[in-house]
Amino acid sequence: MGIWYNIPIYFFFSVKVNSMNKIYIPEGYKPVLDAYDTQRAISYIKNHFQTEFQNALNLKRVSAPLFVTDASGLNDNLNGYERPVSFDVPAIGEEAEVVHSLAKWKRLALKRYGFTVGHGLYTDMNAIRRDEELDNIHSIYVDQWDWEKIITRETRTIEYLQLIVRAIVRAICDTNDQLRVRFPQLTTVLDRDVTFVTSQELEDMYPDLKTGSEREKAFVKEHHTAFIMQIGGKLKSGNRHDGRAPDYDDWQLNGDLFFWDEVLGRALEISSMGIRVDAESLDRQLTIAGCDDRRGLPFHRMLLNDELPLTIGGGIGQSRLCMLMMGCCHIGEVQSSIWDANTVKACEAAGVPLL
Image 1 (cartoon, rainbow, N blue to C red):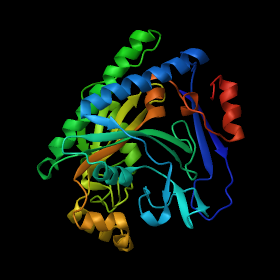
Image 2 (cartoon, rainbow, N blue to C red):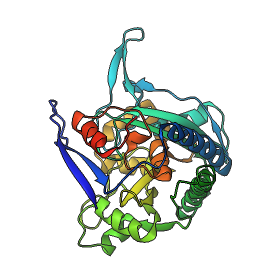
Image 3 (cartoon, rainbow, N blue to C red):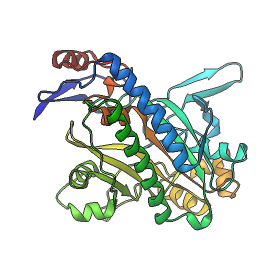
């Protein structure tokens, strides 16, 4: 057991948000590492995983933008209601937006940089998601490894997606094993055996659970490491498992990677990824989502005209990976962000050190 804090936060803008931030402190929780070793462990995880990851998927590191122009259509629209942080750039006479993710930019970069089939790129992605509800695993600051790889028409399959997922899980588990050698006081054990399930299978499996997150928790608690596939479209119930923008993942060829977090007693999403839309799936998903106005944007025109390579890609949360491996209960223990006063007070009272 532990303590839940429901913290009232008041917002003064016309966006639908939850009125409560939440924080959960597990009973008897104490950080395993001190401040100095925490920083050493974060550095080790990031450096070691990058090496394992890029070798497993044949990726090269590239530099990426912190912001893009509004008119480019390159920003990730996520679930459709999050507002990007935007600002005017007088020198070019345009509005710029801090990226939500680099899902679209990466695919364009593969074409511009001349990558070929079987090769890909990864980059450090830093974002600000100002409408995020804050809790143990959500921050307004997002840090992740964004990656993208060129594939062929023949490998736009569930089987190839699963192959890539297994490679990522091996890289994560190898990193965790090496971390525990370096820091033997850490006790996180991760299951290398990935169980694959579709969002519809989950709904059929747990008819009494009403939300996607409830079904995720029930399934991952049993299977420990799971990849939940086919997210974005409506289920038989008429509801969606979770939201997805219509213009990067193919909703039939995507998914989320979860590990069971023993400290928090929850399914922890580490990665969202998928085979990207081709002209046919983009056309279909834009119509379903009511986003036909995007067809005229430069990126979307290139996709609809088959001018971009076929790719697979995703993002892997850096801070979430660190908190999972290090047995932390709050993402603020492994990243420097800002928190409301009551969250800070609750963490101080419980001995949870926020960076």
